[in-house]
Image (cartoon, rainbow, N blue to C red):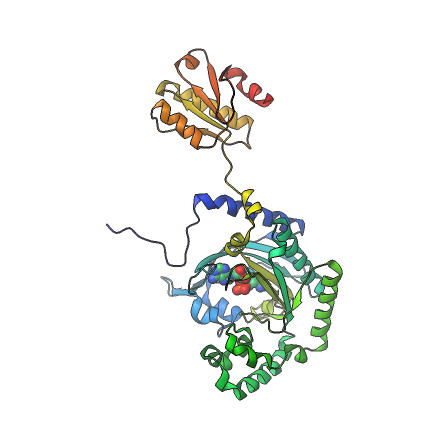
Length: 422
Ligand code: HAM
């Protein structure tokens, strides 16, 4: 029978790789804890309406990338393409934003029906970070410091750079949009197919085009910053001043817009040149209007998400080397069936005494030779062996697998104490 395969663009994360995921996740957790963020876990499925109202109906994500379906009750549901919408929905629904600020994070799979390629998958993983209830630029700066600390902890600070822009307030975006449409309509003959499609629906995304032939016409387009109001200008200046003072390097990119509709004011991306076309490892910005748009009170917020697969891809060798699967300390073997219960009891005693150590017990029988081969292959330092003699006098034999050292015979009663001295 033909064997089945995973859905295209959805990857198994295999046992050889999960240790790296764990290590990365634990560094991320540590850094988030340092800044006082609390984890929130939302469902993976949400009502389709949520993403239409937040990410935006005419964005690429909602228009052509969501996994949406009617469930058995004919309810329109969508596998989350991102986490901000669900996080805000959960916060509003559970009263987390009433008269209080929140620093929240989440981690997990997201789903977008994009064309799969290296660094772009249909199921991918994000760590999302959201700060709700803070209007000032200092929290934007703190978030970027947090990112920078994370890159430093992962040994990759040199591999990413920060691009920054402000979209201005929602109120000033409409006049800017109108000016942009007017300008691009005047140059319609030079636009590529994608941009013509975007012209009426999402003209700001034209600025984001990677098509080299579009760059000249984009360069002549009206500048967002000419449309900022005083508040937007002040917010952005404050942020830049803080970053300058705190030593966070950035480049203002006046063409940086984002593919989701909810942003206003600050937007940013951490990008790398090392991952080809999928060079954005982390991206986010302010979304001061979103909570109200989803039915909550008017609440400012800012956040970002990083792509875990892209981050893992970018990790330098030195960091990766510290994230390998740990080897067992002891591999415990009964030479025959009679010793099996004893060897399992001894293994439990060792696990009780050394909770951080890996103690493996041989299972599945086999010849003595094959048992030692398995012990060696496990990477363990030490084989603990019970044969008929050891069984008879309640001892074990210690066989060192990685160093030249005489085999030893120790009474079972003294084993924990003896190993503690080594
Ligand atoms: P986003 O820019 O759509 O933002 O995604 C954030 C990051 O997720 C990207 O920079 C990238 O690293 C990763 N990513 C996105 N799509 C894929 C894919 N198909 N395969 C692999 N990685 C991918 C958001 O999702 C916003 N919710 C971020 C945010 C949080 N803004 C405010 N708060």
